Length: 364
Image 1 (cartoon, rainbow, N blue to C red):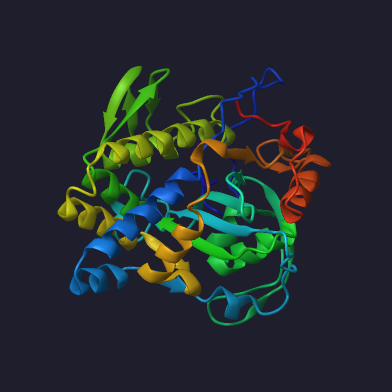
Image 2 (image 1 turned 135 degrees about the vertical axis):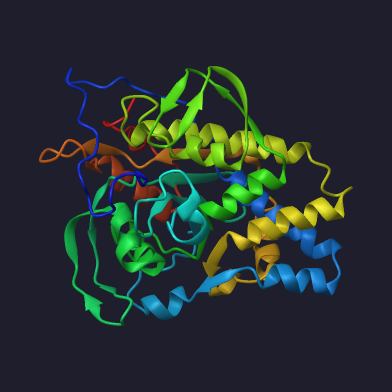
């Protein structure tokens, strides 16, 4: 995930805990896929209840990336029992409307959130693997914006892949490190995310401890707080105001906010208010970039229906097991054999062993 105040190339992050240890932070990491299902549900409602002009205006909001063309045939095999695998990115381009948001002075595009969502075929449960943006990975050969090839590189910070080469290279990097064939890609832009929160009238979160983060612009007292779009962005972005200041400590806040956002939308009478349904769908689709196969309301609706059997109560989020890098304790690397066990279980649609869910680096 991206530090909004640290250039994507890997400038120094906050120093490690001088006490030589970090508090273990083990929040419940459940039901993150709800935000994805929620988005698809909103789109489905708008597409099913609106006139053609409404459908076409919203449909035209969705941007597309031709992942199949960009990656070619050099990809992991699609196994018969692999179910559906979706890469969800939260992006922060720092261009246009994003430049007006807190921390907008940092240049370049970046991916702040990365989830590999696995939905087993014909089952009611799902799992989402969160990849910390500070993870050092081996980036495979990718194509630059001018069409030239960039050779593979080792010890590259995960979020810099998006910043330098775009979403197709992120998909290729995730497939390379995991061996998991990704069926679809969905990216949510933060400026559009802000508009979505404002459209529904804000989100209420329970702040466990006061947050005073000058870098993200977030200042909150402890207790229930009603956040508007700008405050919500600062809440999911903050890292210096929570835990030990590392990127890992921010994950629990993001999970808390996604659940609060879902709860807020569930309170809204979308079926009884076509106008509000349209406004929310319009805001959501303006924030979306997908692979070409999903780049329409029809395709998104069909994909949403294919997930109808998934029970949100049976969803789990797992942070990719990582350990602090021995050369640079401000970065993390996949922890072995845990990470390999996790990806193997997802590839084979098998039960994920408890050992694969343990991460030596917690950021608590």
